[in-house]
Image (cartoon, rainbow, N blue to C red; front, side, top):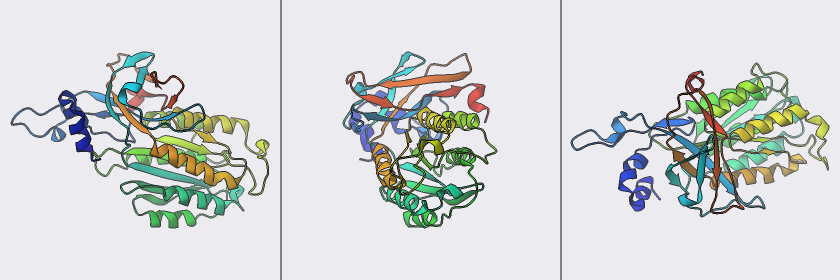
Length: 332
């Protein structure tokens, strides 16, 4: 249903100007909302006088078996910032278009496994809908932006197929640059879009000029949901050899994913990649879209967010862990 129709059907006149003129970037953690226009004034979308800001959340809800739960309503959700309840000012059960970046490790450790990685990534692209966009970054010791965000999925598939395995691994550098690029990837600043990153790597970064904490900090500043995939070491392995993925790498990749409301996957073999990418596709189709206007804070720093489905205590909601305010939010 078109966004304008959603606004009319909700029948909330006091909120309609806020919702229908909502100007948010799925790659930015907070967004300005224009004030309603008075009679004879320019339309609200042309004026940005209001200082009201929204914190925008992409939320996945799962049951006790890990299956995604559709059909929830705004009243089912409770949002907390630093433990204090917040008022949801916008809710949508149908998610806006998606910007999806696929990061694929093309280091020497992927020799013999690249075809399986390419097939899984292509199948994920084929689940996208008209209006969605996808892009590809291939990384080893060098970063190659194989294809910018585009709705031409055939071209994106060709970029995925161009991957060849060689060299070392700079996964943090690839993530950091991609996060920055997503923040600048807005063609129309008035269009609502979600953003997500799927990064496939063995997790053993040995060439980045960017540290883990830099990537984590950047991920917390943006709204992109990050999924990290750490596959088993050989395409024909029966059991994943956990010693091939360094414990600190596993921790760091998990921390990045969970800070953004995403997940880390550790498929036992590369042949399980198809299932993993299908699960990611399902989650992206079932995300809820929430926003709230926080109270002004006199303190700079990180504000922690939690979302609960209090009307359904057996369900679990996943979203980003928080956002920065003040100098921290503007430091990059």
